[in-house]
Image (cartoon, rainbow, N blue to C red; front, side, top):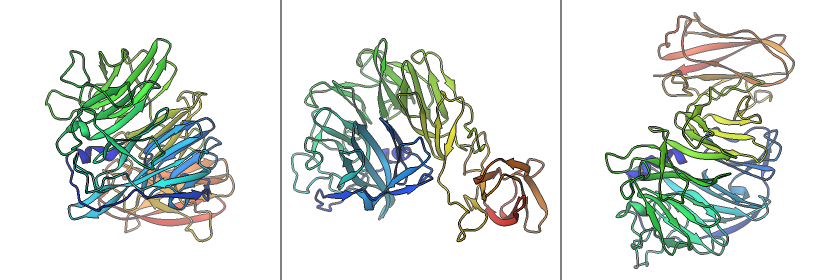
Length: 485
């Protein structure tokens, strides 16, 4: 859901639903799966032996992706896709969001929060925190619409949430009650103050840091008093006042706070990464022009996920390296995207990378990768031997990387086999040989990819295309894909 934040900067409205906070308890009935439940990975959180993945459902692995537990509404997770995860020891907090149809069209609504104190064995669900229409001391937010929670911070005795229409809120009783907190002392009014539109929050063990559409804000006393850092009020300030992510790096030279800072209102603001080594007194700016989504750290190394790839710096942002295209070292399965949304790193240095085309895991500092994706296996009798996805397929919009789109042709083999895949037009003229006698060394689910181009490198015309998957010793199987501009 973090990739939808920009939409909400220009859209805001409230309706009165007179809703109440609702809490329900659930026991663990989660589904076990060999694959992820979705391919758009909004958040990643590593804690001890567990890795939590936020996609269309909440997923967890305790064995580096060999198996997954999938948590949904029936387990106590809210409706919709996961928009935020926070983990502290065995305590896990999760927020969800979903699209809903309104008189103004399709908008995002908050699906509430869920928390577990036993590493996901049992969950308590809370409806999206909103206000009563009877509130008079500030402008109440009385609806879940345009009110998703984008970030969660767990401090010593408080839980903080960053919601768009709901602003910054804290709870001292595990979500039974919530209190609105403003970073500027003004009565809460997100339609009036950019600083009341909150997108990120982070607790560093002493101070609470909050990112809004009006800058970075810091409190050392649990939100009673605040210091604001923005593009305008410092000689060496942040690049832009729209702060979509905050993170703490603990280095051998002391703590560093990193922020993803995007242009908000003033024309001289710009998107980049901003960081401070002195508690916000001065800021350094790097990766100018990049829209960053999140950060992860391993010692003095900082990793940044952006709309144009994964970056790494080992010298506090002075020099950056961008990672090459990511492919599975065993299957050749690629992540066909340059839009990376989330990242976290285990204590052993394992990198978990969330994108809009699946999840990557590297155990050797990004030299080799394992790719995890959601798909339906064709090994079951009820399923076809092959299918194409996405279908319809647009070479100009789907799975784009290095200027090309990609469609996958999925299949399953039971023994090591040679594979040949060909694409034909509606008249059964050969368009492209996608794979010729490609050897797959083991049983399993695989896919071959087509970039929507013919043998001379031109993008094919719109229409229906047929493809064949020839599996040695098993036969030739056919499918079709619609190509649209």
